[in-house]
Length: 135
Image 1 (tube, rainbow, N blue to C red):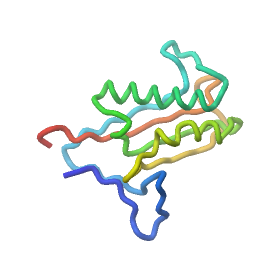
Image 2: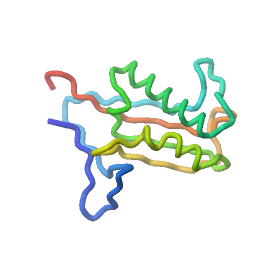
Image 3: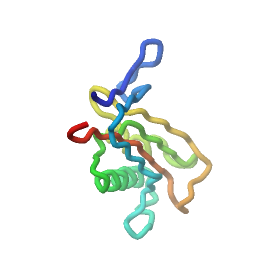
Image 4: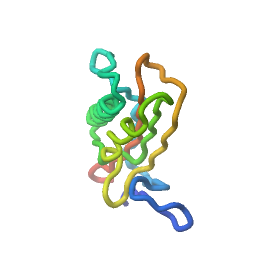
């Protein structure tokens, strides 16, 4: 059985996101906590929202890889963007990394007053699912 990302009739159909994810029994589900645009020492990489966004997704990729998954296995993203950030730069930098052809993942985006990391303009978290051999 495969992981299904669905665009049900009666809901908006978008090439950028799906509406529903169905993960079959036995699949491994991986949760990646909020990742900011920080380097391995915890320092914010730039004051630029686009650069922070790219690093936040890269940090999510590193976390996924540690669990045996990749960006292509993400079934859902949550993207938090600080309200004073350049939305076009922040989301535009990562939009192509979040979407994929065919069945794109679920995406929730929110504009927030602040984030826990001083200087952070964006935070991403992810849920991935992987069907291992024999499942």
